[in-house]
Length: 179
Image 1 (spheres, rainbow, N blue to C red):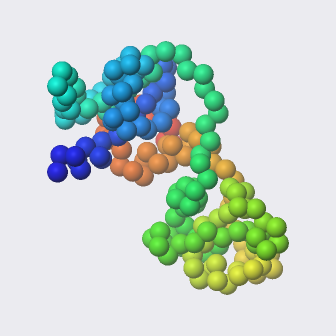
Image 2 (cartoon, helix red, strand yellow):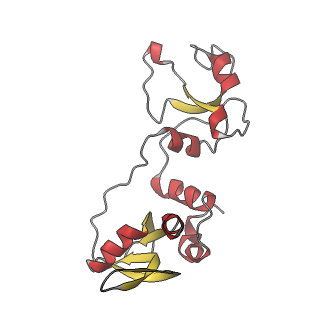
Image 3 (cartoon, rainbow, N blue to C red):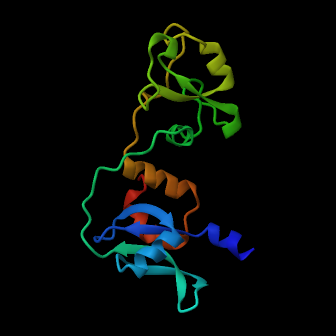
């Protein structure tokens, strides 16, 4: 039971300037802590023990050294497309549970439409069936917004608000949240 409870603990990784960078597992945070790559800023009440160490689970850690930042990209996946579109059909606007949603190629694959951020949208099964192998214009359907690759920090902010992040993280993530 303890192992299952520990699986839910995640750690917010901050830059040296206390800006949110990403969310990592508590195990990775502890490895980085032992390697002196991060400093622990906030902890959970739980502890992990080894033969020689007793450490509180890190909730928020901050990088200590300089970090060569590469532009972060949001990985293209079904779950990330659904999250980008806020689990709403991009044709009718209905909010549906994940099993009732599909991914639709705006320009159908049979017409050379690629599978990428700019050509895939979330669609309910009814709208996807109605659109079939046509473009939205041919099907007399309108997209609610043009599909595009999400910006990493905006996407991170959305996920942090949706996933019921620990209360302690709010101090570090306030500037990310939409106003």
